[in-house]
Image (cartoon, rainbow, N blue to C red; front, side, top):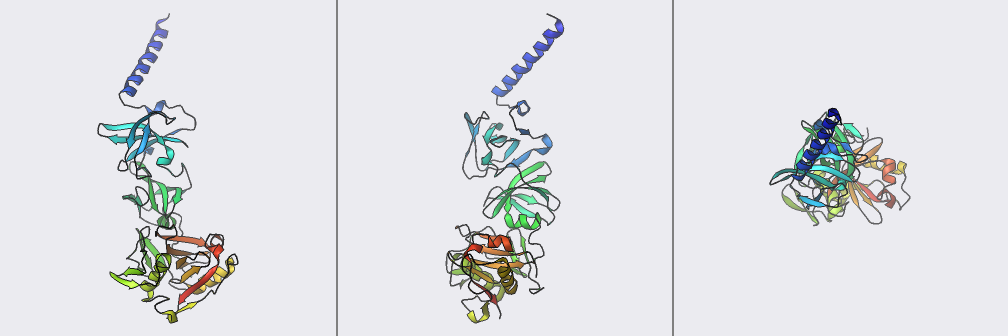
Length: 351
């Protein structure tokens, strides 16, 4: 056998033995993966994140996810090297240093891809997971990929100095800063009808809704906290929150001072609400008005109006008292669960 052939065989054997030794000692070699549809991240595009759930996540030594080898805890920051539709190849901290393994993709991601935008609206807070601790900040100019939405939160991928982060942000912040929805919302008939959200603090027409935060919880009591004191709202959950918004803006609500509010829509039966009717009523009502649906009644407050649609804030749309902000076009609202219920009223403050 020629010496050149022997050398090549020896080199292959030595490399294979080294790989086996490194693997046995807990050092993984991600570039050796040959699975189909695998995207291996380069060093510059390494992604950091936390698991989506608040419980321990199983780590496996194989991509089939059948041989358990460790656990990732909710407090562990994870480094994602490889993403597929079924599994991710990750690094995670242990008492003996960083180890690597495979986890189910849905343990860290709502989806593996989405539309990418530029943050043109300014800074907003990102979180480790839904309702979790602060993780960082997306700033103006960031490249932001929207991966999915759950409740009032949206999962995003955005660039940082060391690569990228997977994180959650309030959907209202993503809509405002990334999608450009809700910026400078105003109408010719409702001059000054603007709102803004800084972090999770909602401001409507210059008034901060400082007692309850977007993404936080509203009370299940008929009494709301207003500037540090309890005020009777004659309703809890969604209805109480709508009246809280009015009280913050006007010092009263449609039950405490019914003569100062007027129904501008009238009753509209389920399935009978049209885009033109909705646009006419919402535009006439303006910011601060209280929308109440028929059927399984739900209350919302208008906080922005444009020619193409409107923005609301409400509580308990998820059945967990969560406060949120949502933007609708006239047609998207008509086709939504709430739009199909029709209208009980839209009450406008008339003073």
